[in-house]
Image 1 (cartoon, rainbow, N blue to C red):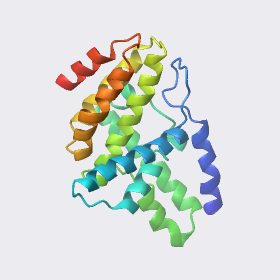
Image 2 (image 1 turned 180 degrees about the vertical axis):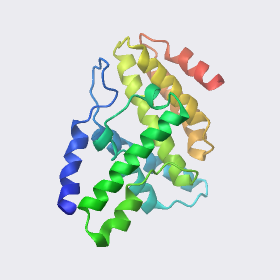
Image 3 (image 1 turned 90 degrees about the horizontal axis):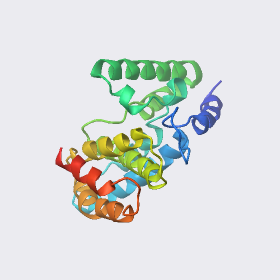
Image 4 (image 1 turned 60 degrees about the vertical axis):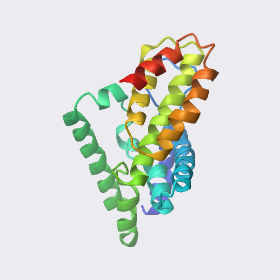
Length: 209
């Protein structure tokens, strides 16, 4: 019982593999994904700050580092399934939030419960920090899919993952998205010139949607 239970539960994130059921040259755990999202987010936030935007850094680190904690209870559900319908996505989120709430109620000391409820909540919202989390999360999908495509993985799901992540990123109105599209994405495309899949074409199609 107590915070020890929470600390111990973090080990489970190392054993949950993202994009289950598909062949992958490189496996990525939810724990590794969360760490990368924090790294992406802090750089994206730096770009926002350089454009005069005020960042709540405490909030940003809390929501990025904990955004997938609920997958301890429900696992990683493939993106196409998760977003099949708004109703299904809402039901999955309701289950995840309910399991987190129950975990906090049963394991976290009373004086820390409000803190944990705030830190383990769904962090994606219309705030600058919530939008940065959304971009960082999708950015890791871009790089995970790209890694597989560059190595010759023929699973169509990784093409879909790459394309859909780009489509969602470009729709988010942030300075860091503009920077990504102008300065980072061209490097991604150039670095993938020898990829068995035509990344340049897929990228162009995604940006035109």
